[in-house]
Image 1: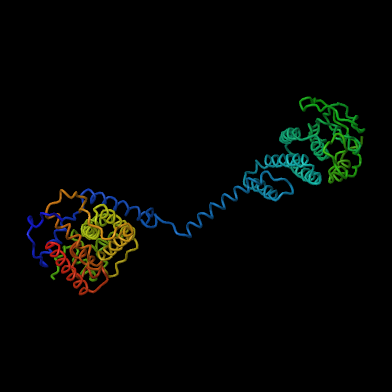
Image 2 (image 1 turned 45 degrees about the vertical axis):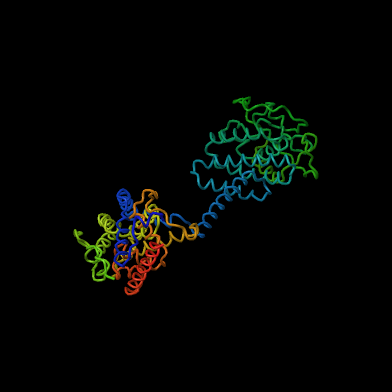
Length: 315
Length: 210
């Protein structure tokens, strides 16, 4: 309040009418800014159109989210991250581990999702995965699971071979891929897989009559490893490095250098399969060095060997 | 206390709103369509009616809001919020005999209460009124200063008295119209207004004699 107020304005006698005049003066002072008025009109019309089209929302609803909404949002994110993380972690799982069934389920799911013409590639991929698992299990020395997985590989390979029987070009392509995968295995795992795959139909006896490359074709009779187990020189399929099909009829005590697939001549004569010796019992304590000790023989191979013997012609 | 004259648009809306029929929204909008007719047309999807509805309501609502609040910026923000809420609620509005303007002023009243409730914790006790409309103190004329004193005296009234004054002298509503908005009887609103003016006169006389 100014010190000179009384000199400027004499004390007034306020009546109701005077107060009303003041109030009316206040109302006159409170005129909205024309620019604000015009701008707000445009906003109102825009919002009205948005609400009418169903794309508008109430101003209060846009600012806050209820507890339930937040809970649902957090739960959705948590579930999504959890599922994604578990699925990613399962891709490195090995047989016997907690997430391994999920890994197999994901593979099956891929088969169901992708088109039919890609199923063969997926089966090849899955077979490669099994071989890699076999590799890791062999490195761990978990021979029980190696044997079990070798049986599964045999089953999958049979299914793949059946599926590709009508298309030998595809079969050859997949065999080349599998050969490359087998190259990555350690000697112990490779020979175990080779022994399993040696008994597969379509490997030793290709349908088109020419000698197949064979998954174990490069190794020929080397599969026997130490030879003491009686598996050596199993079926001695075509393309063996020795070039002598009959040489596989006897067990070889040592491994020979494995030739490459490119070295397999196209005109290699058809091999004469030899009867596979009976499998020997598994060693009680397999040692990590497969060259020094007898390697374990996959359990399920005996029936397969018998079947292969039955199907093979007599020498 | 005499009733102040209403605008030609608000009188049939607030006082005679119950007599309006829904048929007015069906045809083309008349030039002198009431607020209720405009509201029904806007509910039916007429964008032009929304524009005219805004033109009819923006000044009364702004006056009411500005009289309740201290700063122009706050008055503009709350007025904008009021119209956003009105437009958002238009699809759900059903004319059931109650005037649309009363419904709109109810929204404005709630918005002002929310705003004051939000600001109250930060407002110092016995705070002196700021210069109105952002004007600096030196630029205030004698009349401006008196108006500022009057506004400070209004803020010393009870909330109901402030509400009644803002509706009657800010928005220009009659006692019946203000009563509809406040949910009170018209006589109650007249009593609130009478006591408010008396308190203002007393306070201003005491201030002038100090």
